[in-house]
Image (cartoon, rainbow, N blue to C red):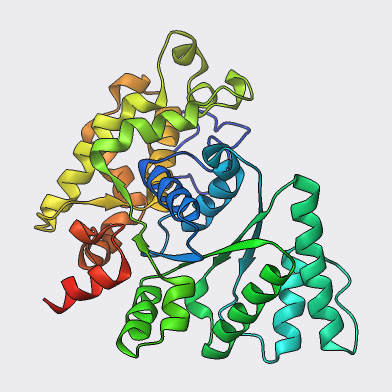
Length: 343
């Protein structure tokens, strides 16, 4: 019996690369830069905390990693950072809450029947980390903060106070989905100044990538810090890369394809491309170049539009448009944003 013939034959398609075309490292974007500068400004002003919210898949978690790596350099003095991620299913007890935070801080001694001992271990671990870096500032980055319960916010106040008792200067960065902004509004409306003053003296919208910034962002995928062989451009088309082609040159084509997809859905608002979908769009275009043996400078627009659709961004475009682009609310104090919303 003859074997069934594949729709796309091996003669029609080139062999796929033997490595991933994109590294997993965080890539600089203008939104990351805005976040870094806003956070640094709040710390310089000796504010105790800040809220960062934005739609899903915008790259907030990766931005947190980037922020933790670069913040000391931006501020000009050493700081210690701890990143905690709050699971969707909250810890059932205070003990579990502290044990999870201990593990996420790198403290493995999480077993003891006395809760006070566990808390003390966490605070001592944080103090030791700061001392090892010669830092007085401790930045707590709390990702998926929209999952925090009312009681867990109270625990954060307690943690903040205990860190201060150890002569540290904590700063709490709450990062989460858009409903996190609603938490800040609820604190304002209920006059919960304890929470407002601690955690939301400023709120910041973390948005997707502007289409005009695509070239700047795509250039990050060709960072040669680990050698040319680690770049997306070289892995896709080594010969073209050697002759000067770079992934950033796909920016105008990707922008045109995205606008075509948006026009087909009658979307006239500004488009913000979440990082997940940018990576998927780019990967689809790069694999299309490899498989169809296109010259990297000659990928047809029709193929680029197919790549946008293959990334699934076309199906979620309306969601991100409904969530808005931030407008003139971006990076403004919580109180001002509340008044603007009321207006």
